[in-house]
Length: 312
Image 1 (cartoon, rainbow, N blue to C red):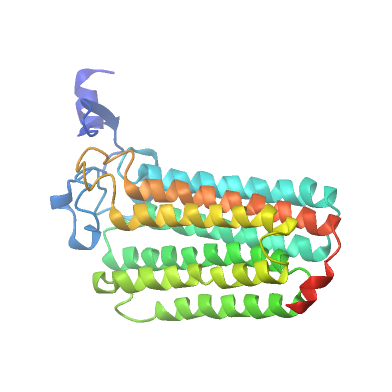
Image 2 (image 1 turned 90 degrees about the horizontal axis):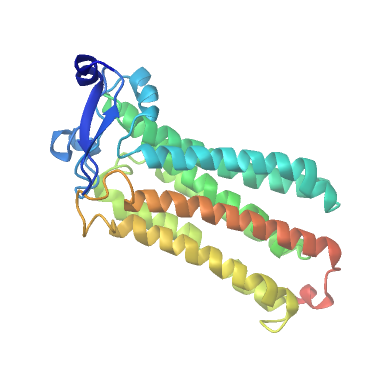
């Protein structure tokens, strides 16, 4: 490439402690520092460079192919969407038929994976269009991203509660109904004009934590109606439930503490930032929970419901 052309089509940005690397930027797109971006984009002062801003929708879409501080966020959940889409095809064509699944199993699996896919796409949409020149458009995509989180949580609850209380239709309906009410309550809260504001950041986090932590109640109830920690089914599945919550808690801790960039500002602008770790852990958590649901579904089809579950 001629030197003059290279200067026109290349924007040099600093990747943490590395040397300056040439990154091809489509015409009309440039990267900004934290001090240069609009106030509504200033979420994390420890990410100091690599921001896209002031772009129309067309250039927002084209920016998916450039290296910015949102690249990992966009592609981690775009690939996550493709992962859950392919898993859905595999489940419907191979896994469920091999397990002798009922019509209910197909519906439950479809709901769970559909919720995961919606969560991934809402996240991709927000991180792709957060650089839009219209603050109103950015806020709409942010609201959709939060809605996607709620839908993703619902996708965890539906197969989890269904198979945990497979032998207890009453409690299955009670817990699924309660979860649905909680998710709808979170959706309703988004109508409040301050919901997306910095003042409500702790309120938003508390709402999502409460909805996620509610799962401890049906989990403990499930342990009790299945005879306690000494039974085979509890020993097989309870550790998987705890690992799912461990992954979720780890993801949330990265999200709220902004570690590692808090201690290394400017050095993880493009790779290794807390929000990127959060994204990867969310995909891992959804994948792990889907595999757990497959495991317990197979168990339920191979083993009759024990008599002591009737006491639930």
